[in-house]
Length: 216
Ligand code: 5GP
Image 1: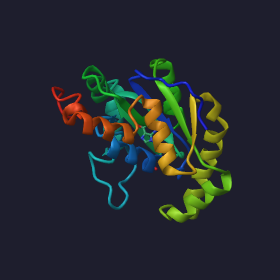
Image 2: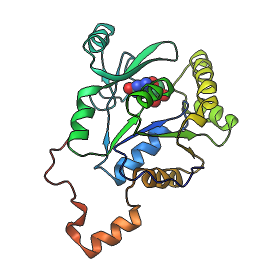
Image 3: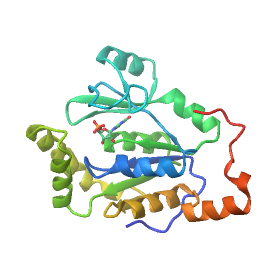
């Protein structure tokens, strides 16, 4: 569920939500439909999972490199997640994307979202929630990428995140990925796909809104 306040013109949207809720899937579908949206690539000290590519899914950095980023004020926000690894949003690329007029998306967890709330009060904050707690547990087990103790740790974090969902401007229940994506598109102030298609048919060049901007 989300309230009906459309934040058209908000330049930064923060998407958060508990482990295994499907944030990555929702954001992935959004980017397929709207590649002009600029997604921040976080720095993390966690090791890459099979299939993850450095510079594409994350910037995988050592603890020393992460410390250097912190010391040079190079992170917009950061957090120690699940008690194990540090994650942070590199500041300079976000500032460059905003300066270039992009719609910026940060997919980060609760502690980071709270920091962005303090430093960027005009940002909008979206919480992606599971249809139920049991469904979240089922999705995490089905994913099978964590050991039993890692799952336990993640569910502990998820409890705290679920308890904080009222802090967010909008709550999207991810019971249907297509609907969750459509709602996120609305919140970003972007046209839903049907409108994009109709507009392209009417004026084939209309989709190229940012053609003079540098690609990111
Ligand atoms: P994962 O290890 O599953 O990729 O991510 C673990 C958690 O870290 C997720 O909740 C994800 O949203 C969060 N996360 C990813 N990048 C960042 C970041 O730059 N900052 C913060 N605060 N959290 C992040």
